[in-house]
Amino acid sequence: MEDIGGEDGIIDVHTHYVPRGWPDLRDEAGPDALWLDIVSESDAIIKMGTREFRHIKSTAWDAETRVRDMNADGVARQVVSPTPAFFGYDLAPDSAAKVARIFNDLALSIVEPCPDRLIPFCQVPLHDTDLACRELERCIANGHRGVEIGNHVGDHDLDSAGVVTFLQHCAALDVPVFVHPWDMQSTSRLNRWMGQWLVGMPSETHLSILALILGGGFDVIDPRLRIAFAHGGGSFAFWLGRVENAWQQRNDVVGTSAYPPSHYIGRFYVDSVVFDDRALRVLVDTVGADRVLVGSDYPYPLGERPVGDVVRRSAFLDERQRRQIASENALVFLGGSTPTSGLGRSA
Ligand SMILES: [Zn+2]
Image (cartoon, rainbow, N blue to C red):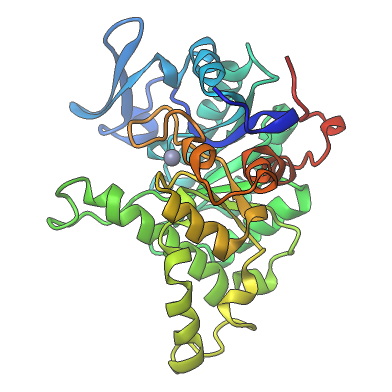
């Protein structure tokens, strides 16, 4: 696979893990607690009570398998984040904190065999700001390098006071944040053809970016916060013009943020997992080549393989832009803008 990441290799900021088992969570999450039905050495089914949630393979938990795939795809390092189904924001805060601790510690054991290749991101009980901040601190002290959060907490968006306080804490601790859509609306219309994933997720992420802009989040959060949104930022880039027009024309949107929406370009990153070079071009033209990061959604079927494929084959990118997207922007996002900071390429 052609190396497009230059000296640093590709850094994939959007992958997920699932441990190969965890303690019984029924006391914390009730009878529908997620558990893992291990079918074979390499296959398992995440179950919700007796219901099947998702088939997974050892790629979800086995570092060696992941690194083999990374080598095949020319990926030097990958960020290993939770699978959103385990966020538990609907649990009692103490239970969610306990679940977060269990999964965060299991994540460290998954990446432990390959510390130079796998970069762990933790999860937090985001619906309880104090507990979320404490778990973040504990995780960073133990070796996590960032945090993945869901794009909303029930009816609260990213501009809610508790989430803004948490994001401020991330900025103060210099911890990068990856925002992933989850808990999509379930309606008979959205439940056909994977509508929750194909329509719900992009609109959820679009709404989250709007929440930080129009909800005033970016106006109060330290501009040094490094925050990235999954799936190319959802529908945001395509509809920025519509949002901008509403901000100028519609009374219920005018002035809800200190500046027009386009002013906040530069405050966040998006990943590249949009599959189509025309979509990538819209992203690069809208948010800038310095704000796009390679993401893949590995190891799930809606992910991109080979990782970075759309970045590799997009003829409109010049070599400098390709290098930025492949690795240089990720080094900045992760907080290691120079190889000497510990994120440089390892064997
Ligand atoms: Zn994902």
